[in-house]
Length: 195
Image 1 (cartoon, helix red, strand yellow):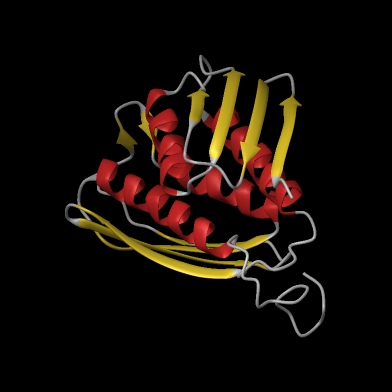
Image 2 (cartoon, rainbow, N blue to C red):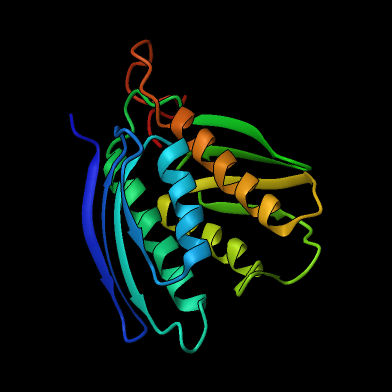
């Protein structure tokens, strides 16, 4: 069974193409036109062991918001469709990841009930030219389009780059664990019989 997705999202603001393999080796190519965002998506790819090909062209001359949010929308859709019926997945996962002085936690439930709880304090508004408030927008779009209940909390940290990167790495590690197939699970991991 191949857990993969190939698709696109085209609006007046963005044009995005994405190929995702959930059971990859952490390889691929990412080009959104937003250097720091590309670097963060590479963290998901590498530490989540996902193969990801992503090309996005957006109205970044206006700002980065449309591109970041629309990538989140398409990635969420890709995860949901690649998971299919979710049979055998572990479903839940929590990861704490440090980066120097910053420590972040991501906890998720691939439940079909989208939700984002986001508790992150930054020391400023930007990492380079990237507005840190867009991290929340990205994960909200991803959560609501993947059907994932997602909790993100930074325990502490001072450097915005370190805080953001620890969040993306923690998301990657939690996702890798939650989508793992456990052969002991018959059907889906739910007393209701569906997710």
